[in-house]
Figure 1 (spheres, helix red, strand yellow):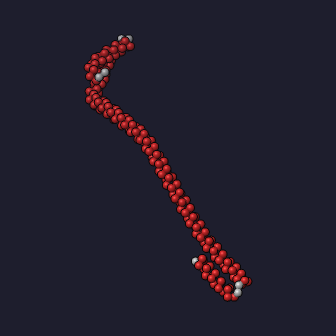
Figure 2: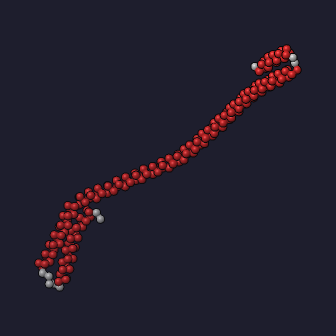
Length: 195
């Protein structure tokens, strides 16, 4: 019921209340109620109706404004909540998209790391092969050097032993003149071979 309808019904309600109250008071007293008491009761009810009417008149506009304000406030809060719900939905969709993008990006990063690992492995293998070739070449060079030094040492020892043996043979079988000549020739020959 609206306030206008209540305002229109107020005089009718007051009249009904007065009649019912007066009838009840007379019936309850068994006819022993004085006319003065009935009018006193009627005045009190009229006072009550007037006070209620004044209160309704005084409170009607602020109450109506307050209710309208509260209705508007509730409407604004509902709109704000709806906007927040829509924003939350958008953010949720954005987060889902970011998660999907992150999963794809993770796969890209893993693929890149795998490719880098394979490239590094290929570099390490190539470097190891180069190192092995260098070590093999160095070993070959060292073997050649050691062999050459061993040959030279062997030649020197053979030359010394040959010279010593030749000297011993010459001392036994040849004369002093032959001995001197042969030793000189042999020593010249051996020193040419050593160099």
